[in-house]
Image 1 (spheres, rainbow, N blue to C red):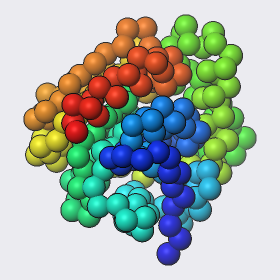
Image 2 (image 1 turned 45 degrees about the vertical axis):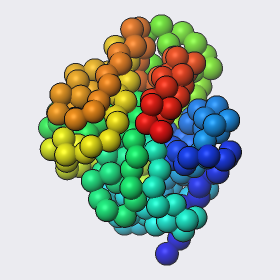
Image 3 (image 1 turned 180 degrees about the vertical axis):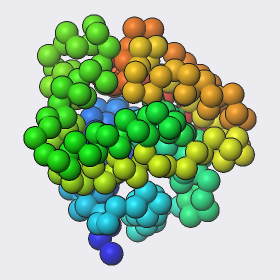
Length: 253
């Protein structure tokens, strides 16, 4: 079994960071560096991204198990989790299992379910990737950034890079898996851990209504909506979002 690459920084209570699909581990690296002043941060390179090998055939549940195996291999039995987009879904899924004790979850642009319409969109994108000839960059730019955010060339370059972060067939398999991902809202309702939900008001990839639905069922959730921001909160709202995660972690200690 090939384990996932995990970037470790700092000392203190462990904080696991999970990127989205697609994103790059590098997108969460500035947040990991900031949190490492107080915590031991563990930035996971998910299957097929960064320095981690692809998972073939791709299976969402198996990918959660691979995250657990990789963290257990470095001696981790409990941790706080910070997840961006699909990374938040993974954090919720891992919290409902028994392998690792999840102490808290910070979900940035979080999802806990995929609607039929969104599933169809993901499946359609996957089909285009398999057919070849599609550049995911412009699609990501439109879905990840607010209209104002798309005026910032550095942010545009960041989100466009996500499309090249993983081989198209692997990304297609991952998107197909998320298109039919189980609804975790009932499971989240049974979690008794602090949950931060922070979402951009102009997020079209994971609209605020999705975080609102999670907050409505969660026992201990704080919901924060960022005016003017899109999906890529760590581009458009880095300092305030990082500070919010820091407050959440301190309160959960």
